[in-house]
Image 1 (tube, rainbow, N blue to C red):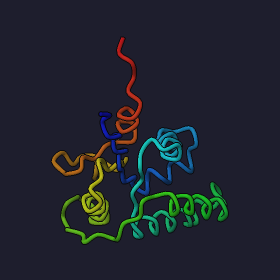
Image 2: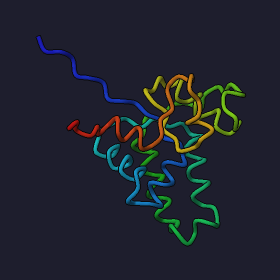
Image 3: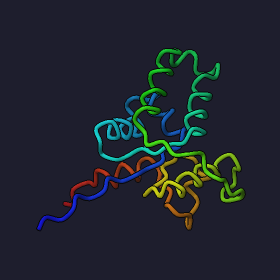
Image 4: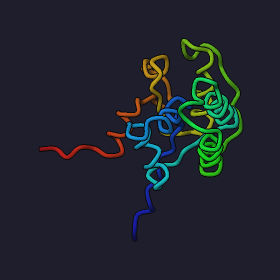
Length: 148
């Protein structure tokens, strides 16, 4: 009898990681974005996360870096491809930045394996469930280097 197939990792990517994926196509966040597109893990998002992503990318400071059409296309890919869950009930005070508390809440509510962020307010959390990984640490988890 064959073992059931392993469940794909379910992950919440901080909007900052997604923004970096779009703005720096050779960086680690961009590699994670491409791995998600190729099915290496499942991306989980909520409406609040998608709204934050779109709102930040539409700020004037990004106008010289991405066009409105590129923002539309990128956000649409996330909106259509991610597993979308409802906005969670947010417990305040989980992180140093109250604006980040919803990311932990959505990760918990959706029962994901990891929250991936480059934000030190999140990556410094040592006892939060699910664990918070930097983009590089998550990439290492997906693509471990061969041992010599």
